Amino acid sequence: MMFRIEYTDSAESFLLENVNREATMARIEQSVAMLAEFPFAGPEHLPDYPAATPPFPCRYLPLSGAPFTLYHMVDEPKSLVQLINIEWTAGDPRSHFRPR
Image (cartoon, rainbow, N blue to C red; front, top):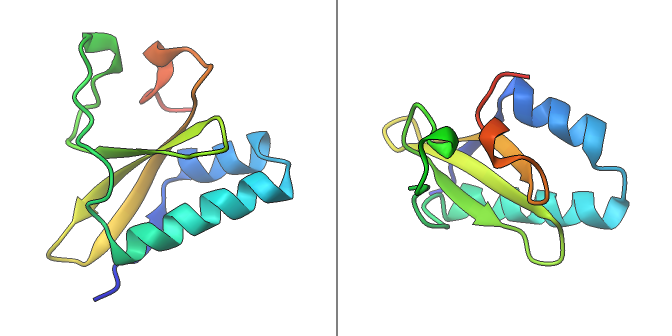
């Protein structure tokens, strides 16, 4: 069964403002398509320090060949994967889940 994919405003804004290479966008799109089929891909996000702890349970999926990590929540009853955040891995880890 395929899950529906939704992007938060924050994730969508990040893509529009920070991803300008077609190859990188294609890699992100491939990973998101994979999440529709395998929503529990990637480990649970359980950081060691409080500043990087989200206010909700989520998973993360580092992208090979791109400096980004996708953070997503799975709502199994609704068959929904919500892409909640995209992190530039060289960025400030204290700002992962702050509203933009």
